[in-house]
Length: 98
Image 1: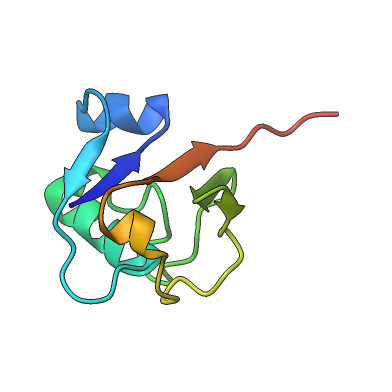
Image 2: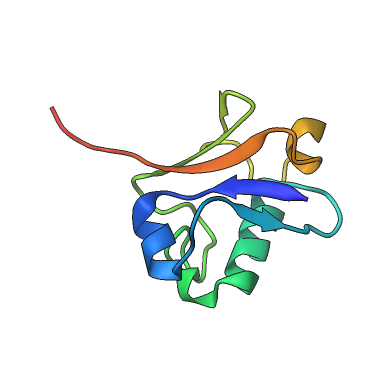
């Protein structure tokens, strides 16, 4: 069971309370986690990544085990701590400013 934390605006859109618990088939990666999130919450499709290119939307970042995975290939396997649900996979809203 994979545990996913979403930022407030996405939880609000998806009417989600707390963290999301998901079963992910096969290799646990950023791509497979996001596929599972979008399958369970279709209203989030296109909000985290582009509909066509599947690239991460600006101002969203991905973190796991204290590492920023935002620019890593999304098909890279994630650590066992994420796959087992011990640690949280986080989608974090970034803030721009100066």
